Image (cartoon, rainbow, N blue to C red):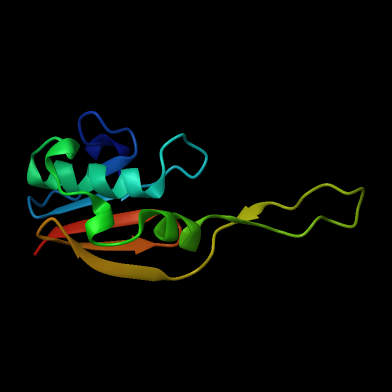
Length: 115
């Protein structure tokens, strides 16, 4: 993804050049949850403030979504007890939210398309 296409007000999102799609990359080490990234990307696609959207919980359990794709810590290494690197789980999930098709990938990529 090209960082020159970062969406205004969102340092983790990219516009694909299309008016009917927004792609955002969730920051696993940031303070926002994956659910916030989904809502923010959806709001950007719809051109509204996030508080104008229906609660994400009316579509999908936000806590379950975050837990499903939370990075998994590898077992402690045997060489001195240091922890291994963090590796995200695998897979994707798709759902409809606020008249948009949302796909969330395990690596934190969120793709929101007009339905």
